[in-house]
Length: 183
Image 1 (tube, rainbow, N blue to C red):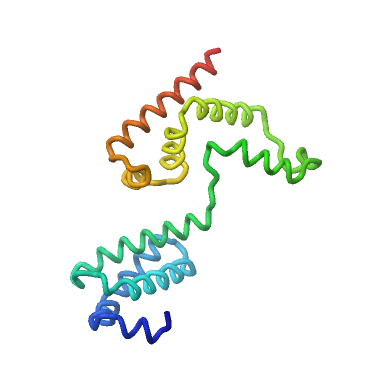
Image 2 (image 1 turned 180 degrees about the vertical axis):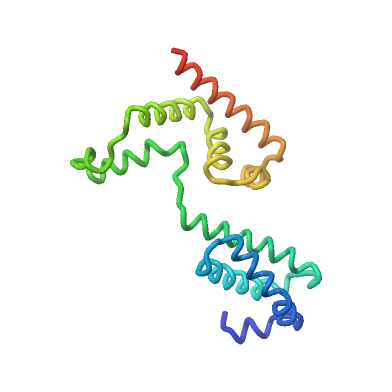
């Protein structure tokens, strides 16, 4: 979409509202990011989202709350892209792929202490106790950083069901780890 197309589809209040709130928006961006460069990037991303979606905003009076949500979501997207995490249930699988890629270099690049190996083995054993649905739920909640509401929406269950199933899964894992340490 070209600049002329974006500008021609914007409501007439957009520019005045942006000028009114741009200082507050930048402060929110800098509070989220901590650094000036990343705050500038986030500010530009928010401005772009604002221009793209301003036509769908019902009331320009509640725009600051909407922009705060946009800032949060853009910041989360940025952080997800910056810090890619492997799900806990795939730890041993990703290491195997690494080993297959460099089979002669295992000891040079990757050497674990005995405690790290024990801890990883306990986590893998605890995750093995869970069924695939529970494993996905644990990955989304604890590794993916998704909220209870987001997990419920992804899995198609209510927030209370997410909470109950998460507690049940964690309890199953806790019992498995306690059995391993008591043995």
